Image (cartoon, rainbow, N blue to C red):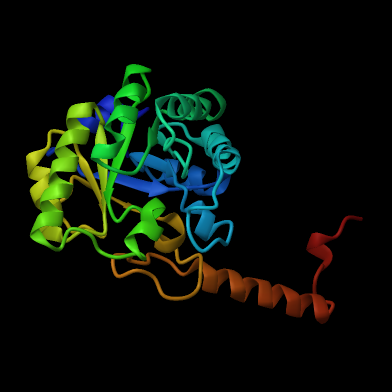
Length: 267
């Protein structure tokens, strides 16, 4: 269990000292469980577009949808650092839009920081957010908002040239003032290299053990959805199976007139 109220500076200070446990959460019950379990960071990720809203990618997710879920998480989170994803096109048009949208997360949802995707092309926006006193988490490698440009969800940085670009992007983001960087879908060796080269923590997802921390989508970790999961996921529960079984048994009791019984009935 973490000391009370994790902050962006305290996460940055965990570099090479303590492993950072970050988990996504999109609503009151999942955030309450994550906070009670001692997660260091709760990320309201735009992955909610896929695991909560049923879209095929993160691209359809809007600021209003992100704020709706961030507010729910903000109401219950007590100790963990609350980071909100800036969705596609909320920061791509320049620093002014980025500051306005990031400030909405802070003001309306109680977020402690925001996360955005991309390297060198995002430096102006990162610097502007940091100048506005809004902590920023970077995100490199397989960046889901770039799925169209990448041609799908593919591991990034396998070639030497691409690996060097990602490493340079990580160094540039650190110099611009991010307090941590998510590395997604990159070879373990490259993730370890980047981790050793930059002064801020790396948080991996599909990036091996060499990062300073790890993040998983809560629906993947808890087995809340059926079907295959990415290679990097380890399921710690099968809530989809448990929920399906429970609902099936309840429906059978309803049809047999076994529910409600005396214990569930008012006199």
